[in-house]
Length: 445
Image (cartoon, rainbow, N blue to C red; front, top):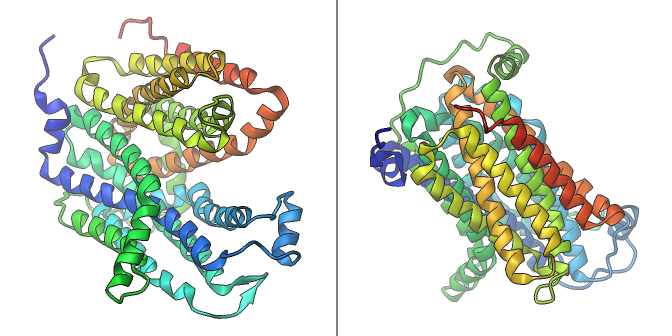
């Protein structure tokens, strides 16, 4: 087999000027999304929870109904931050399909620019939430306004995501799609790590840096800057799109057309199911990481983020590897290898729990397996979905993935409490092995 040109790797895909603009937009947009959550928690801690919670009141009653304790400032911050997470999650779980339809009706570049531009404007409104005003259920109106802004920010993200995914195959030749998706996956992981790790120090630096020159609330400059740079970068993309479809067609009919793609194209259906399974496993790992960290003397339960960070590092390494050499392998075998790697890592995590070195290594290996599965699956969906249906399919994908992320977060803790960590790890590994066998990697491709 003749060797593919170097353009199949990261160097080649970064040499595409229009894709490079989209990638820069992704960097700023992803960082802004992560900084947004950090900023909300920062505001809660700095302005609304400055002391231990008072006894009694509406908040205490609400916490009691949820079997939560509000005996410390940290617990109250956690409760209020949970409201932010819920406001951010609801649109992601229910709006993906509808947003995907409109992403197909409108021009992709305009959707992405408008989404980031409006999010920048919403971010500019957040300082107003610090103004004095009426209270409701024991909290300032500003907190409830932040919930509304967070909800709207998340709604706009649901339009941006399918438009962004649908734009990639319009800017990248088919032979370079694997490298493009690898770069996107690695960038997403890097943004998550950088955004959550550096968000608080960056916000404090802006707050006190601007205060030194007489400007208050300097921390609010970060989000409009990031979203604005994302919109500006994407606005310069030259994107040739097919004429927009008539808007006379019923939106529910268009949703049905998007679902029909899964029925008519087994490759798309299989790849989408693989992504749903992967994100379900990763979401369960978020909860299981607390138990794994608790068994390690050098960490403890509050340091579970170290394990998640290592899986992120592994995913980034795997993404770079897939970008450089993934085109040499059949995607079905890559998926089976990824699932097998995940299953092997889960089994050994249970057997070797308590050992810091082995646990960190296995978390990284699990991340590599996730990259071997996720990137080929995403590339298959992009290649095998008709251009006119991509927004709908990616909207459905976002819906299913967010559900796959949410349900294990709710269930995993209760299951571990009842059955223990080891049986749950074995059960998850069994699911991964079953999915790998369904790929039938032993068959000639």
